[in-house]
Each structure stands twice: as structure tokens, then as C-alpha cells.
Amino acid sequence: MPENRVPRRRRYLVCEPRHFAVQYAINPWMHPGVRVDVALAQEQWRTLVRAYEDHGHTVDTVPPVPGLPDMVFAANSAVVVDGRVFGSLFHAPERRPESAYYDTWFKAAGFDVYRPENVCEGEGDLVPAGRFVLAGTGFRTTREAHREVQEFLGVPVISLTLVDPYLYHLDTALFVLDEETIAYCPEAFSPGSREVLARLFPDAVLGTREDAMAFGLNSVSDGRHVFVAPRAENLAAQLADRGYVPVPVDLSEFHKAGGGIKCCTQEIRETRS
Ligand code: ARG
Image 1 (cartoon, rainbow, N blue to C red):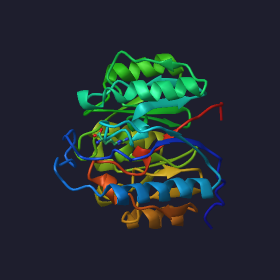
Image 2 (image 1 turned 60 degrees about the vertical axis):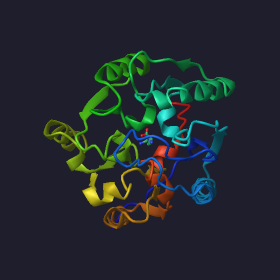
Image 3 (image 1 turned 120 degrees about the vertical axis):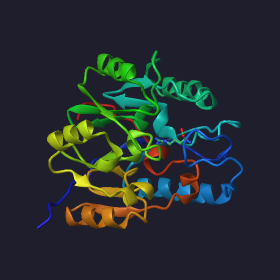
């Protein structure tokens, strides 16, 4: 008998894809000049926002800025734990200007924002999971940033090395299901990092590389409902077996920029859970 999973209400921050485009290439998914259907992207994005609201979550929005086509990927703007906001310092010069706009939103919403010294891309690579923050490195966020976020949040940080250029952010290869467990694609990690994950999360759901390439491991969970890419069928079946409720949301237009559901979603964790 699968467990009866209990959802927890969340607060999410998102950014409308009004200016979404693929204008530069900073990961292997991006082919500048590819046609992006902005109307379809907006429809897909609105479906995601509606799915969050229909499941009882609060959704805040930061205004999109012309000339910043990746700003829709709100997860990269910060990581927020106990109301402490650790901002971002983007690897790519094209994305660096986004931080000022996100910081303005956080300040207006009543948060102080810590400005990091080292390259780090928010929840793209810094993923709060139970008693730890899981931290990716290899393509974007640096090890120095892992130390910096540990010092700022006072939460033990576990450094994990990513090895697949298509799975360049930690959140393309791993997501948190609830306080106890996670789902991830082992092939995305170095051998040592795989061992670390197996020790910390012996009950994790393991996705295939196909699940990851369908952006299935770029999912958002409220502890019961898992907002997940529809093509990650193997993963969705495993989640259902374990008592989670997959909620399929198709963000195919965003895959052209190397992003999915989680990339579009920043979680604002205000209080200790
Ligand atoms: N084009 C964006 C980049 O390469 C996609 C970001 C995806 N975000 C994420 N959290 N994985 O930076």
C-alpha cells in the first residue's frame, strides 16, 4: 500500500515569458535562431501557474524585462531558506543583469538580499533538501559558492559534481519530493557524487537519462502533487507507485532554452519547517 502523502502549501515566485526567446547559446539545448512560439510559451506557462493555484499554492510574479529572454527561469534568481535570500551571480554575462530586477522584487516584498561573491545560479544549483542544501557544480555554480551559501544559511551543504552538459544545472537532474526524499538521475553525477546521494537518500526515486532529457527531473513537488513533464513516463509511473500524484504540465517551448517546470519556479521558504 503506498503511503498517503500530505501536501504542504508553498509560495512560488515566477516571471511571465513575455520576452522569452533563444538569442544566445549558454547550454547545449539552445540554438539561436530557432523559432520560439511566444504565444504558446505564454499559454504553457499560464497552465503551470494555474496548476499551482488550483492546488492551493500562492504564486507571486516578478515583472519581465525586455532584452532578458531567460528571466522566465525564476529558479536561478536566488535560494531562499527561513526567509534568508541568497542572491545569484550568473555565469553568463547575458544573464547577469537579471539579478538586479529580482533583488528589487525581494526587497519590495520585505526580504534582505545577500549578494554573493562567487558564481552561483540560485535554486538551479542550490537545492534545499531536508536537513541539507544539495549543491551542484561542474558547469555553473562554483565550489567557492557552495562554501559561501553554507556560511550564509548555516545549513550543511553537500557538494555534488555534474558531468553531463545537457544536465548542466542540479535541478535538471534532481528534485526534492518531500522532507525525506528526492528523485534523481544517477548518470548525471560523478561516481563519488552518486555514492554520496545513495548514502544520504537510500529510498530515492531513480529516473533514467530519458526521464531527465524529457525534463522529468526538473519537477516541483508539494509533498503529494508532483508537477512533472508529461513525457517522463517512467518517472511518473514510479512516483504514482510511491503514492505521489503526478500532475503533468507541458513546457515544451521552454525546453528549447534548456528549461522546464522547476527552472520556471522559485520557492520562497519563509519559516523553518
Ligand atoms: N537558458 C537558461 C540558462 O542556460 C536556462 C536556465 C534553466 N534553469 C534552471 N534552473 N535549470 O541559464
